Image 1 (cartoon, one colour):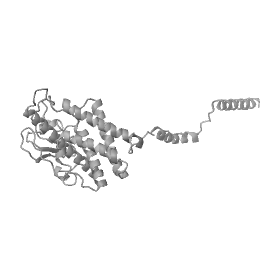
Image 2 (image 1 turned 120 degrees about the horizontal axis):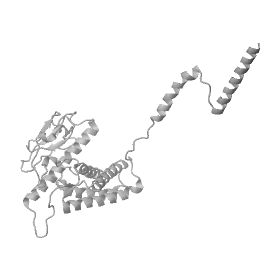
Image 3 (image 1 turned 30 degrees about the horizontal axis):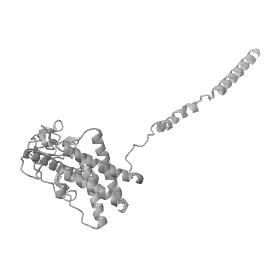
Image 4 (image 1 turned 60 degrees about the vertical axis):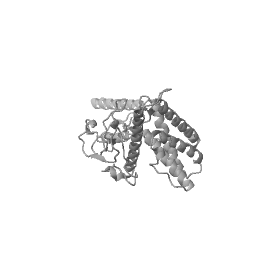
Length: 315
């Protein structure tokens, strides 16, 4: 009897101590029910851990208070890159030139609708060279500055976003010094005339650059609407481009003929695809790393030792 009394007394004391420990540390006794419920709490923690901030993207709308600053800044940068071309023979990349072309089209389309005038042709003579296109884009920026508050919101917004994209692209090229040389001596020295060969080479390069820009813009628009690039380059006309432009470079006869490459044979070294025919080359294979890219098939080198097929490469 004494033994049982001692046993129960000890058990009560142990239970009391356990309760005190539980009270101090705020823990609850672990039971089978707790063990079963423990894994259920893990998914909630996992969901919290996987929560990520949304990816930052360019705003779809420009702050109205900053639009005038944007337009002034873009006009200033267009004048800068025009001067760099005239003085040093440096041009912007094909991708940036494409943005300039998109801005020019957006403003002209909106202005033509506002004044109920016919929209200018995309292949008009005044923009068929690099200098002409830059001058046209500068005029478009000035037109947009004047008409932005009178145009329909959708037209003005589209043109302003295109202005923002061009402004940022030019800024990047200036900041990273990624402008592309066109000729060694673009501006004749005092008392010295530029040779006809130099002038012909610059003309070929700028015309080819604009032709490539026109096609790549059409390809980009096709991709946006169809979700893929066309199986054949000719499929761009007439919806996305009036016609595939004829190209003439480095003595090749002017032609709009093209060679389509529907394979991955040149992924390791795309220079092997060029045979110096003077025609367009279009990579149409969906699995190729060059899918949707267009080049001029000319391996002649310019005065800087750069093959002409590299003129339209994005930098």
